[in-house]
Image (cartoon, rainbow, N blue to C red):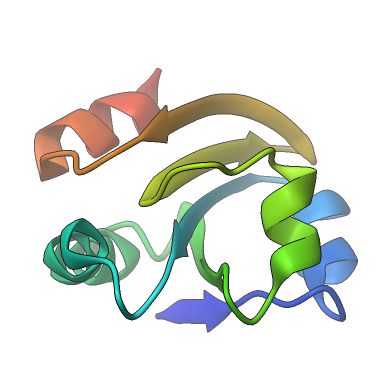
Amino acid sequence: MELTITKENFDDEVRNYKGTVLLDLWASWCGPCMMLSPIIEEIAEEYKDNVKVGKINVDEQPELAAAFRCESIPMIVLVKDGAVHNITVGYREKKDIIKMIKA
């Protein structure tokens, strides 16, 4: 299951979380974001025991988008134990995102 991440729950769900969090920064008007969305859903389901998956709508959460220096979407951010480990921008295939998680 994907969580909606907001500035209100960011500390609890991401910054202070002990474990791996995959964040999808997206917007409803973004074509590649819409193509990526079902892949993110699949990963959330398949890795639900190991990875927390969150979605950040950049239009609704501009402060979080700015905190990640997000200039292009979709942006995928991998956070481990509260620290950013990897960032990728643009549409990615599922196998590439899984490789990022496992690295």
